[in-house]
Length: 360
Image (cartoon, rainbow, N blue to C red; front, top):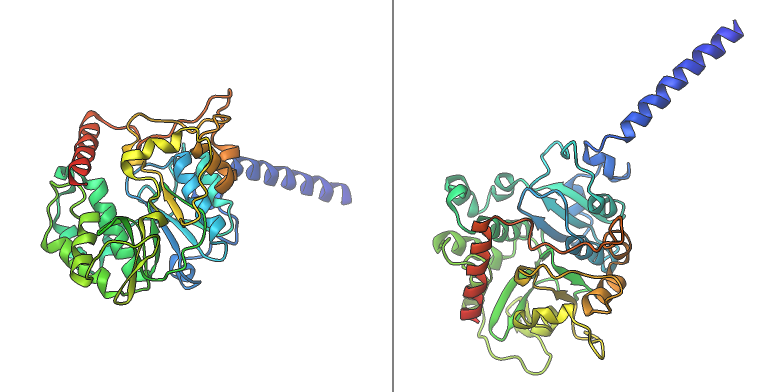
């Protein structure tokens, strides 16, 4: 009897081991990427933990580039007690990843204690905001700059609803932002929308969403983005030029000096990929916007190149530097801007760059 029992237990254990082995080979669900304690935490519960840092991916892409990984990792490193969220349109509400997804970046980010991945459901996000009627009536298939426009709308709605800090996925954090309510100046009297932060239900963001719909113009790149922020900023504030490296106060929020996030202007974006005789300290900066939208040349972050951007990766996102930059045969991962673009997408980006150059 004892021998039969031992045999039965052995067979059962063998089948169980085989099942577990097969299960570990299937990267078909987000929980496969998440530690067990993270898989049960909903978005609402996380947002209740304090001011969140928010990144958005409004394309269907499920393979974050090293720059996206660096942006998220650096934020998690600077804000260890705050949830860092990456909301991805490519994730569905059941948290299922494509069966063939083996993204090393998603695996790396999900292993960081305060990083969380969630689906981006725009229709649900826009409910109870001025953007809902616009979104339910728009034909996105004919919108020339839809990825940018939908991202501009989503960041406004999310920060209005939940509060926190929004950052573009090409922003590397280097020290904490000491402000709760702020806009970031790209230059004097002109606001960006690549980084901003507010407490929940701030009236400035509600007015931004109203203006987004009332003055909607999909044919001008940035009209719903930085130009929208600047239009409303001029209504709320009596703008003046910055004095030295000091921020401006505007009613109940701050307008932060360009040095805080844009110490290298968009015209000089290549400087990040160059070797500097003396590396800048960025002592007046909270984060650095790398202007990936301008990187049509696909400039790479190269190990051992001694470029400024390599130093930034090594210091502020060491896991990304260690795990994602080196290819399987010693090749270097190239940054993509953003994703593999079709000829139409390339033309749209060129149009956007020309628009920025003429506007600024």
